[in-house]
Image (cartoon, rainbow, N blue to C red):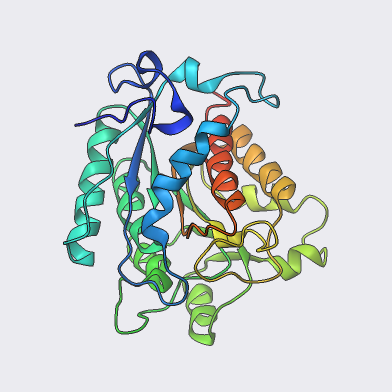
Length: 296
């Protein structure tokens, strides 16, 4: 396997802290873009996240640590998916993530469209009992199929629910009637952004989210879960989204009380007019890593 060097890897860190053998964390770039339906460009997401990460500080003042030097972060060469079907792409991503989990790595998957998340979630589901999936998203993604594809980005969580329906959704503000009925049938817990902002879950809504999670947690983070006022570079921006501090507060509590086993960040669609979105996504990756390693 090929590792990316200091000019292209996450955080631009030297080989001493970014080689595979000595790193506890492995970053897999999956530039999958097969089923996007509105804005395009997610295939460029992983590369832009890595480039923007070169301007993220190593030191996390909240945790008072430089995680990248303590644990090591290896960034692997991006997967080549362009000529593969969506099914074969997902199989390739699944095998890649599974291989690194079995090697003892904490795996971060960068996308790419959200449909790819089925693969790493499956890999973790196969290896970790009592696993919940914490989904940050503007959309439920619970359609049986969309635009003729059951592997659409709009159907990713319906595919996940086929093998693990222990899903907690946060930030949802757009869904069709069938999705609403599906989540009730599968007992998927959904925290709608509107209800959060109206105070329907109280001031400690983050704690309530965490109480619905099992001990092991996989996080799938579609960046359109954020409000488009500061995350406009995404395929289907929806108004009324989550903001940074409230989201970090939730992630921190998850890290304190649960075992975050892995995560993905998807649906960044880089736009030359909104380069700050790339940085927000890169900062998000490092913050989740810091929260995931709070107890390690």
